[in-house]
Image (cartoon, rainbow, N blue to C red):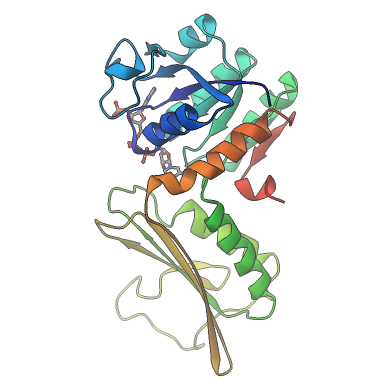
Length: 266
Ligand code: NAP
């Protein structure tokens, strides 16, 4: 594979710093610049905790992509900037790989049109953990035989949205194969509001938020005399990097926007 020139936006972040290390240790990847809105140094080696690389630090993606060579932008910033950065990347014919969460269906449709107009690939992956994608696929296989299911997702207490995008995506994938049903007793009452969690087409989703957690999800199925648990745990942000690498390698070969890592995994 030819050398892939990469710009990382959000290099000081928990995910972005792992992405910089991924690019550094991957033989066929080369970091040409990073975009840090606070300009915490002249080059990457000035940023605490990052490898001693000479790639320049820019505060503005548009300026960065006008000045450095780049095949792929990895964006791990915020939902607001994730969207803006994708639009800027398209203007420069750069293929974006975006891990920021919080894209609406309308956002994805609009960005998809931009990718089509340019005829270049783009990937938005709300969850880069390959194990989490497999968990969703296995859960959707099981739901055909076990229509009674509850999803329990657990995240660190800095997470702003609930339920997690992965939990909603899991429920959506399950609903596509599961026979429609309202779970629990027909006369069920909640003495404390929210006790039974959120309702997604009769399935329940429970969100746990605690310091110390990273990203975890259990899909719990129940049937006559048996239960089945499918669980995935991300213990460290490094767990997302094989998925980022797969997305970077794939985005070079496609000419449209793909939403979700499951759509590029065979
Ligand atoms: P984080 O530690 O807060 O990192 C975000 C970084 O982006 C911060 O360093 C922030 O800088 C920087 N930033 C914000 N706006 C920027 C801009 N305009 N230009 C350049 N840098 C900018 O968060 P995180 O845990 O790494 O997560 C980052 C994103 O990835 C979030 O949206 C999160 O939900 C998502 N996420 C995705 C996955 C996945 O698998 N796809 C997994 C975990 C998290 P400041 O400190 O200056 O604000």
